Length: 119
Ligand SMILES: [Zn+2]
Image 1 (cartoon, rainbow, N blue to C red):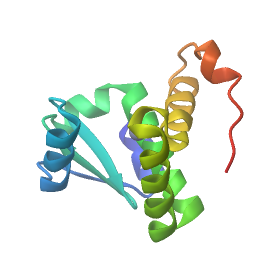
Image 2 (cartoon, rainbow, N blue to C red):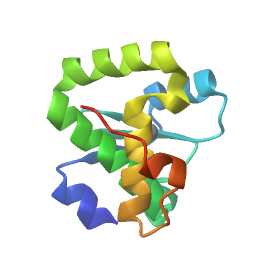
Image 3 (tube, rainbow, N blue to C red):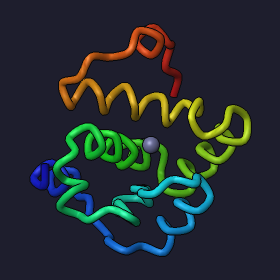
Image 4 (cartoon, helix red, strand yellow):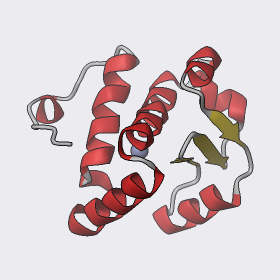
């Protein structure tokens, strides 16, 4: 999966304090979070992250979202979406889950397949 990260122009940051904060906020043992083209990891080793095809594809979708909306544009839209709908239902997360499953060759959940995606 490393070549896909390189092709996207993305970089992995291990032991990221930003991801550590996200871990604490989301109360989850491991976190990958994207900031621009950087994929910040906490609680997971780079090699284990790279083994999880869905996870890599999911985060690469976020890298693309940053490219589409710009750094400030994406962060503000993501924040507004999260406040309105919460983390899980925010449209950027829904898209990353759908694209992640598609690109990882997993079945796409019906409820997500028919959900209209807006930009
Ligand atoms: Zn996500």
